[in-house]
Length: 461
Image (spheres, rainbow, N blue to C red):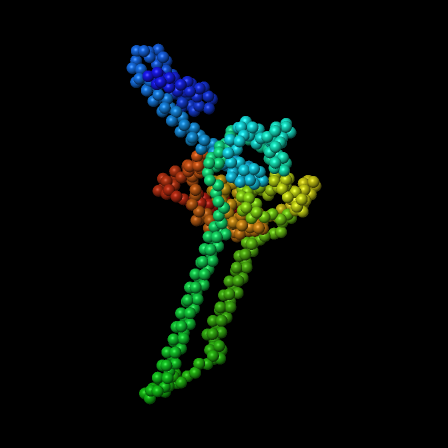
C-alpha cells in the first residue's frame, strides 16, 4: 500500500516538472488542473477514501498521460526531422555525409558526441569558436587540415535543432551501400536489350522475305518448264512463256522513272523540312566553358544538390549561374593548387564574374519561370535537363521547342498534393479552388492543359 502511494507521489512530482516546462504541448497544459485537483483531493481525503483504488486511479491517469506525451513528442521529433532534412540537403550535404567522411567529418551520432549548445554555436559560426580558443573547435579544425566550415548566422536555434533531429534519425539507419544507377546498369541494359530484340526481329523478317522470294523463283522456273512441254498452248500463251526478263526495258520505263523521281523528291523534301524545323534547336549543344566543371563528379559522385549552386531555382524565374564565392565554399581548402582553381582566384582578385557560357537558351519571345515548374509543378530537374549526374560536360538534352512544351502540358497530370512536415501527402493550397471546381465537373484528375497550360498568353506576352 505504501509502495503504491509512494509511486503515485513520484509520478505526480514528475508531472509537475513537465507542466512547468515551456515546451509542454497545450493539450497537456489543459490536463494540468484536473490532474492536480485530484491530487489535492488525494492529499486531503486519503484516510477516508478507498486508498488502493484511488492510488491505482492516480497511476492510471498518469500512465495515460505519459503515453500520450511520448506519442506527441515522437510526432514532434518526426516533424522537426522532416524540416531538418530540407535544410540539411540545401546547406550541409555538400560537405558532410551521415555515415562516412567527406569534405567534413561523418555526422553520425553527433548529438551524443557534442552538447546541443556547443553544436548550435559551432554551426552558426565555427570560426568565432576557433578564435575564442575553444579546445574542441581548435582540435577539430586542425584534424581536418584547417578547412574552414561555412557559417550560418541566419539559422535560428530551431533550424539547427531540426537539422540535428534529422541527423539523429538518419544515424539510426544502416548506411546505404552504393549500387550502380539505373542509367549505368538497368537503363543501359534495357536499351541494349531493346536494340538487340529489334535487330533480331528485323533479321528474321528479312530472312523470311528472302526465303519467300527464293520459293517464288523456284516455282516460276518449274511452272515455266511444265508449260513449255505442253502442246495445247496458243500463240499468245507461248509468247508469255517464252518471254525473257528485260532489265533495261524496265529501268527505261516511264513508270519506273516516275517512281524513282517521286521517291527522290520526297526524301529531299523531308530532309529540307527537318532542317528548317531544326533552326534554333540545340540538342547536344555542349559549349566549352572557361573553367572545366564536371557535373558527373559534383552531382553524381558527391551528390551536391542542384539548388546549392543554382540558388534561385526554387524561388525565381531563372535558376541563376553560380558565382565564384559558391565555388570557394569548398575550394578554399580543396585542390587549391589546381591550375583551374587559379583561374577562379584570378576572377575573384580582379572582381570579375566567371564568364560561364549559357547552355539552355530560349528566344526572348518566350516566358519561362523555373520556380513555377519546380515548386507548383513539382517537376524534377532531370525531366528537362536529362541525367545531369552522368554528364562530364553539361549539354542540352531536350529540344525546348514550342511543340515539346505543349506536348508536356497535354500529357502531364497536375500534382495537387504536397508534403507536410511529417512527409505525408496533403492538398496543396495553390490548387484547392481548382480541384474543387474540377470535382464539381466530375473530374478528380486534370492535366496542365485543363488549367490554362495551352493559352498563348501564358508564355507569350
